[in-house]
Image (cartoon, rainbow, N blue to C red):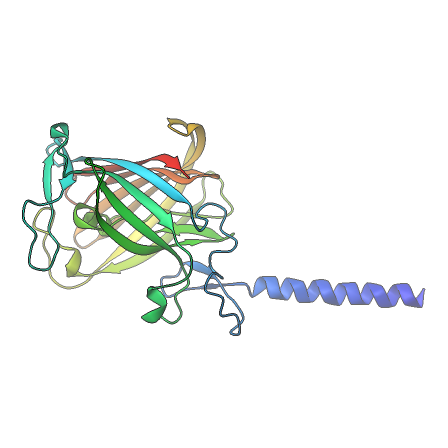
Length: 278
């Protein structure tokens, strides 16, 4: 009997310690997103990637996009005829022209490690992702490195923000929290500066802050190149002194965000749709 009590006590202590460790596993980052918290001795460059269920290292997600300007005309972002002195620059062309220099696909790749961000941000706590902008010609024109936060508490994704897609900095970011259930609501805030201003949508000076409201409003079944997928629908709206923007996200447990419908600050629209995952 004494032995059983002793082992029971040990089990209780062990379970209590495990519960405490579990409770300490997560923390809020500087953007108030829940991230994993590791022992200070854990220097593994892949510690934020290892339990990813969707955006696993090595996976590639290929998206197509539609852009309609505020007049309802379908356009595409394209490589300019001449490059600006800083190597940037872009233009819009009619979608139906199918110009060889227009962007037709955006490929999201989940990368290993924390470079290059760890060199600038010692506490960097995201899975590094790369957006590759593919032209109709098949060539890669530009790429952008940023991050995604994926864990058992939430999934939060930086959208592409190169060229035309810089307008998405003013929109709600794709974001879903656990437990996933219809009717769930949450909020988030994001400060953004004038570097995201562009005369093609809106000019301003100084900093602004988006206050964003999210709500899981229902379920949907969507026909995709990956098959018929069941999704949760997340409706979100961001408001700031500049105006309001919206995002309707379609989230699937296996493939993540499979469709993103944006209504932008100038009332133009961008839709991203997942075509493949490999």
